[in-house]
Length: 278
Ligand SMILES: [Zn+2]
Image (tube, rainbow, N blue to C red; front, side, top):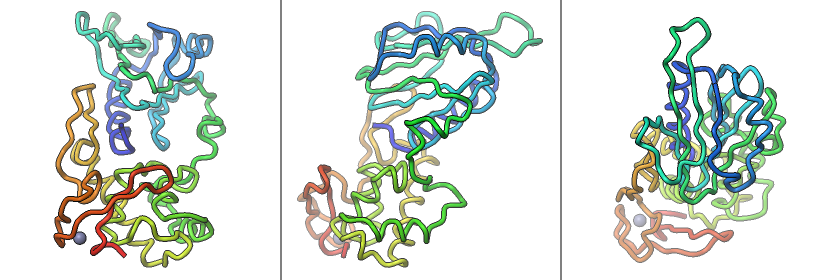
Protein backbone atom coordinates (compact mmCIF):
# COMPACT_ATOMS: atom_id res chain seq x y z
CA UNK A 1 0.00 0.00 0.00
CA UNK A 2 1.41 3.42 -0.85
CA UNK A 3 2.39 5.32 2.28
CA UNK A 4 3.31 8.99 2.62
CA UNK A 5 6.68 8.80 0.77
CA UNK A 6 5.16 7.02 -2.20
CA UNK A 7 2.28 9.49 -2.40
CA UNK A 8 4.81 12.34 -2.22
CA UNK A 9 6.66 10.82 -5.19
CA UNK A 10 3.45 10.39 -7.20
CA UNK A 11 2.58 14.01 -6.38
CA UNK A 12 5.94 15.19 -7.71
CA UNK A 13 5.50 13.11 -10.89
CA UNK A 14 2.02 14.59 -11.41
CA UNK A 15 3.27 18.13 -10.76
CA UNK A 16 5.77 17.59 -13.59
CA UNK A 17 3.06 16.45 -16.04
CA UNK A 18 0.69 19.28 -15.13
CA UNK A 19 3.48 21.86 -15.47
CA UNK A 20 3.74 20.92 -19.16
CA UNK A 21 0.04 20.14 -19.72
CA UNK A 22 -1.94 22.34 -17.34
CA UNK A 23 -5.34 22.15 -19.04
CA UNK A 24 -7.74 19.35 -18.09
CA UNK A 25 -9.49 19.08 -21.45
CA UNK A 26 -11.60 16.08 -20.56
CA UNK A 27 -11.97 13.48 -17.81
CA UNK A 28 -12.86 10.10 -19.22
CA UNK A 29 -14.46 7.69 -16.74
CA UNK A 30 -14.28 4.06 -17.78
CA UNK A 31 -16.53 2.77 -14.99
CA UNK A 32 -18.97 4.27 -12.47
CA UNK A 33 -16.97 4.04 -9.28
CA UNK A 34 -13.88 3.14 -7.32
CA UNK A 35 -14.38 2.76 -3.57
CA UNK A 36 -17.22 5.25 -3.99
CA UNK A 37 -19.26 6.34 -7.03
CA UNK A 38 -17.51 9.00 -9.13
CA UNK A 39 -18.99 12.51 -8.67
CA UNK A 40 -19.68 12.64 -12.41
CA UNK A 41 -21.15 16.16 -12.58
CA UNK A 42 -18.39 17.71 -10.48
CA UNK A 43 -15.75 15.96 -12.56
CA UNK A 44 -17.35 17.21 -15.79
CA UNK A 45 -17.35 20.73 -14.40
CA UNK A 46 -13.55 20.54 -14.41
CA UNK A 47 -13.45 20.12 -18.22
CA UNK A 48 -11.37 23.05 -19.46
CA UNK A 49 -9.99 23.91 -16.02
CA UNK A 50 -6.41 25.09 -15.59
CA UNK A 51 -4.27 23.29 -13.03
CA UNK A 52 -2.52 25.83 -10.83
CA UNK A 53 -0.79 23.66 -8.21
CA UNK A 54 -0.35 20.04 -7.15
CA UNK A 55 -0.08 19.34 -3.42
CA UNK A 56 -0.14 16.47 -0.97
CA UNK A 57 -2.10 16.42 2.28
CA UNK A 58 -1.63 13.20 4.25
CA UNK A 59 -2.09 10.52 1.57
CA UNK A 60 -4.36 12.67 -0.60
CA UNK A 61 -3.07 14.25 -3.78
CA UNK A 62 -4.70 17.63 -4.40
CA UNK A 63 -4.77 18.98 -7.93
CA UNK A 64 -5.78 22.62 -7.59
CA UNK A 65 -7.42 24.24 -10.60
CA UNK A 66 -9.10 27.57 -11.25
CA UNK A 67 -12.48 25.80 -10.85
CA UNK A 68 -11.96 23.53 -7.87
CA UNK A 69 -9.67 20.85 -6.57
CA UNK A 70 -9.39 17.32 -7.88
CA UNK A 71 -8.68 14.92 -5.00
CA UNK A 72 -6.94 11.61 -5.65
CA UNK A 73 -6.27 8.91 -3.08
CA UNK A 74 -4.43 5.84 -4.31
CA UNK A 75 -6.07 3.38 -1.92
CA UNK A 76 -4.16 0.07 -1.96
CA UNK A 77 -3.10 -0.25 -5.57
CA UNK A 78 -3.76 3.04 -7.37
CA UNK A 79 -1.24 4.68 -9.69
CA UNK A 80 -1.06 7.44 -12.29
CA UNK A 81 0.98 7.22 -15.48
CA UNK A 82 1.07 8.71 -18.98
CA UNK A 83 -0.69 6.30 -21.34
CA UNK A 84 0.27 6.22 -24.99
CA UNK A 85 -2.11 4.70 -27.50
CA UNK A 86 -1.76 0.93 -27.24
CA UNK A 87 -0.47 1.02 -23.64
CA UNK A 88 -3.86 0.90 -21.97
CA UNK A 89 -4.31 -1.53 -19.08
CA UNK A 90 -7.40 -3.45 -18.08
CA UNK A 91 -7.57 -1.67 -14.71
CA UNK A 92 -7.25 1.84 -16.15
CA UNK A 93 -10.43 3.38 -14.70
CA UNK A 94 -9.91 7.06 -15.47
CA UNK A 95 -8.12 8.99 -18.19
CA UNK A 96 -7.32 12.67 -17.82
CA UNK A 97 -6.88 14.19 -21.27
CA UNK A 98 -4.51 17.08 -20.74
CA UNK A 99 -3.65 19.92 -23.07
CA UNK A 100 -1.23 22.79 -23.14
CA UNK A 101 -2.01 26.32 -22.04
CA UNK A 102 -3.89 28.65 -24.35
CA UNK A 103 -1.50 30.24 -26.84
CA UNK A 104 0.78 27.18 -26.98
CA UNK A 105 1.16 25.43 -30.34
CA UNK A 106 -1.97 23.28 -30.69
CA UNK A 107 -2.00 19.55 -30.95
CA UNK A 108 0.17 18.37 -28.10
CA UNK A 109 -1.74 16.29 -25.58
CA UNK A 110 -1.00 13.99 -22.70
CA UNK A 111 -3.27 11.23 -21.50
CA UNK A 112 -2.82 10.44 -17.80
CA UNK A 113 -4.27 7.12 -16.76
CA UNK A 114 -5.39 6.10 -13.28
CA UNK A 115 -4.95 2.34 -12.87
CA UNK A 116 -6.24 0.62 -9.72
CA UNK A 117 -6.74 -3.17 -9.77
CA UNK A 118 -8.30 -3.34 -6.29
CA UNK A 119 -10.27 -0.10 -6.66
CA UNK A 120 -9.84 1.16 -3.09
CA UNK A 121 -8.80 4.56 -4.43
CA UNK A 122 -10.80 7.78 -4.39
CA UNK A 123 -11.34 10.41 -7.05
CA UNK A 124 -13.35 13.37 -5.81
CA UNK A 125 -13.73 17.10 -6.32
CA UNK A 126 -13.52 19.74 -3.59
CA UNK A 127 -13.86 23.48 -3.75
CA UNK A 128 -10.83 25.71 -4.02
CA UNK A 129 -10.80 25.86 -0.22
CA UNK A 130 -10.14 22.13 -0.02
CA UNK A 131 -8.97 22.29 3.61
CA UNK A 132 -12.65 22.52 4.61
CA UNK A 133 -13.52 19.31 2.76
CA UNK A 134 -14.75 16.65 5.18
CA UNK A 135 -12.08 14.21 4.03
CA UNK A 136 -9.34 16.66 4.95
CA UNK A 137 -10.61 18.94 7.69
CA UNK A 138 -9.91 16.58 10.61
CA UNK A 139 -6.39 15.58 9.60
CA UNK A 140 -3.54 16.19 12.02
CA UNK A 141 -0.31 18.02 11.14
CA UNK A 142 2.21 16.79 8.56
CA UNK A 143 5.36 15.12 9.94
CA UNK A 144 7.43 16.78 7.20
CA UNK A 145 6.08 20.27 7.88
CA UNK A 146 9.10 22.37 8.91
CA UNK A 147 6.79 24.44 11.13
CA UNK A 148 5.46 21.41 13.01
CA UNK A 149 5.08 22.30 16.70
CA UNK A 150 6.69 19.22 18.25
CA UNK A 151 6.05 20.17 21.85
CA UNK A 152 2.35 20.79 21.18
CA UNK A 153 2.16 17.43 19.42
CA UNK A 154 3.85 15.74 22.39
CA UNK A 155 1.35 17.32 24.78
CA UNK A 156 -1.51 16.04 22.55
CA UNK A 157 -0.05 12.57 22.59
CA UNK A 158 0.43 12.53 26.37
CA UNK A 159 -3.27 13.27 26.81
CA UNK A 160 -4.29 10.17 24.84
CA UNK A 161 -5.19 6.75 26.13
CA UNK A 162 -3.51 3.91 24.32
CA UNK A 163 -0.25 2.55 23.02
CA UNK A 164 2.25 4.94 21.45
CA UNK A 165 2.19 3.00 18.18
CA UNK A 166 -1.59 3.34 17.81
CA UNK A 167 -1.35 7.06 18.64
CA UNK A 168 1.47 7.57 16.13
CA UNK A 169 -0.75 6.02 13.45
CA UNK A 170 -3.82 8.09 14.38
CA UNK A 171 -4.31 10.43 11.40
CA UNK A 172 -6.11 13.00 13.52
CA UNK A 173 -2.97 13.42 15.64
CA UNK A 174 -0.28 13.12 12.97
CA UNK A 175 -0.82 12.18 9.32
CA UNK A 176 1.01 9.85 7.03
CA UNK A 177 2.56 7.30 9.39
CA UNK A 178 1.33 3.82 8.53
CA UNK A 179 1.99 0.49 10.19
CA UNK A 180 5.40 -0.20 8.64
CA UNK A 181 6.85 3.26 9.29
CA UNK A 182 5.46 3.32 12.84
CA UNK A 183 7.03 -0.07 13.64
CA UNK A 184 10.39 0.86 12.14
CA UNK A 185 10.54 4.35 13.69
CA UNK A 186 9.77 2.93 17.15
CA UNK A 187 12.59 0.42 16.69
CA UNK A 188 15.04 3.14 15.69
CA UNK A 189 13.96 5.25 18.66
CA UNK A 190 14.31 2.28 21.06
CA UNK A 191 10.69 2.56 22.20
CA UNK A 192 8.38 -0.38 22.66
CA UNK A 193 5.23 -0.03 20.55
CA UNK A 194 3.09 -1.11 23.51
CA UNK A 195 4.31 1.74 25.75
CA UNK A 196 1.52 3.98 27.01
CA UNK A 197 1.51 7.22 25.04
CA UNK A 198 0.80 9.12 28.27
CA UNK A 199 4.16 8.03 29.68
CA UNK A 200 6.37 9.09 26.77
CA UNK A 201 8.87 11.76 27.81
CA UNK A 202 9.58 14.80 25.65
CA UNK A 203 13.13 13.67 24.79
CA UNK A 204 11.82 10.22 23.83
CA UNK A 205 9.18 11.78 21.64
CA UNK A 206 11.69 14.11 19.98
CA UNK A 207 13.84 11.10 19.09
CA UNK A 208 10.80 9.17 17.83
CA UNK A 209 9.71 12.04 15.62
CA UNK A 210 13.25 12.54 14.33
CA UNK A 211 13.43 8.83 13.40
CA UNK A 212 9.99 8.97 11.76
CA UNK A 213 10.91 11.99 9.66
CA UNK A 214 14.27 10.41 8.81
CA UNK A 215 12.61 7.23 7.57
CA UNK A 216 10.09 9.17 5.48
CA UNK A 217 12.77 11.38 3.90
CA UNK A 218 15.01 8.38 3.27
CA UNK A 219 12.17 6.62 1.47
CA UNK A 220 11.33 9.69 -0.62
CA UNK A 221 15.01 10.08 -1.60
CA UNK A 222 15.21 6.42 -2.61
CA UNK A 223 12.06 6.52 -4.71
CA UNK A 224 9.69 5.19 -2.09
CA UNK A 225 10.32 1.47 -2.35
CA UNK A 226 12.78 1.05 0.50
CA UNK A 227 10.34 0.10 3.17
CA UNK A 228 6.96 -0.65 1.67
CA UNK A 229 5.93 -3.00 -1.13
CA UNK A 230 4.92 -0.14 -3.38
CA UNK A 231 6.53 0.52 -6.76
CA UNK A 232 5.41 3.61 -8.60
CA UNK A 233 4.38 3.54 -12.22
CA UNK A 234 2.09 0.57 -11.45
CA UNK A 235 4.84 -2.03 -11.67
CA UNK A 236 4.75 -5.23 -9.68
CA UNK A 237 5.21 -4.81 -5.94
CA UNK A 238 8.57 -5.91 -4.61
CA UNK A 239 9.34 -6.14 -0.93
CA UNK A 240 12.80 -4.94 -0.15
CA UNK A 241 14.54 -6.73 2.66
CA UNK A 242 15.26 -3.61 4.63
CA UNK A 243 12.93 -3.87 7.63
CA UNK A 244 14.46 -4.04 11.08
CA UNK A 245 11.36 -5.41 12.80
CA UNK A 246 8.29 -5.19 10.56
CA UNK A 247 7.10 -8.65 9.44
CA UNK A 248 10.14 -10.27 11.10
CA UNK A 249 8.47 -12.12 14.02
CA UNK A 250 10.69 -14.94 15.33
CA UNK A 251 13.70 -13.77 13.32
CA UNK A 252 16.90 -12.43 14.88
CA UNK A 253 17.20 -8.72 15.60
CA UNK A 254 19.80 -7.33 13.21
CA UNK A 255 21.29 -5.24 16.03
CA UNK A 256 21.36 -7.54 19.09
CA UNK A 257 20.37 -11.02 17.87
CA UNK A 258 17.30 -11.40 20.14
CA UNK A 259 14.13 -12.80 18.61
CA UNK A 260 11.73 -10.22 17.22
CA UNK A 261 8.36 -10.41 18.97
CA UNK A 262 4.96 -9.73 17.52
CA UNK A 263 1.52 -8.96 18.87
CA UNK A 264 -1.64 -7.26 17.68
CA UNK A 265 -1.86 -3.66 18.91
CA UNK A 266 -5.04 -1.69 18.16
CA UNK A 267 -5.94 -4.22 15.49
CA UNK A 268 -2.62 -4.03 13.63
CA UNK A 269 0.23 -6.52 13.67
CA UNK A 270 3.09 -5.03 15.61
CA UNK A 271 6.72 -6.06 15.85
CA UNK A 272 9.52 -5.15 18.24
CA UNK A 273 12.82 -6.29 19.69
CA UNK A 274 12.46 -6.97 23.45
CA UNK A 275 16.11 -6.14 24.01
CA UNK A 276 16.53 -2.96 21.89
CA UNK A 277 13.17 -1.39 22.68
CA UNK A 278 12.02 -0.28 26.14
ZN1 LIG B 1 17.55 -5.96 19.23
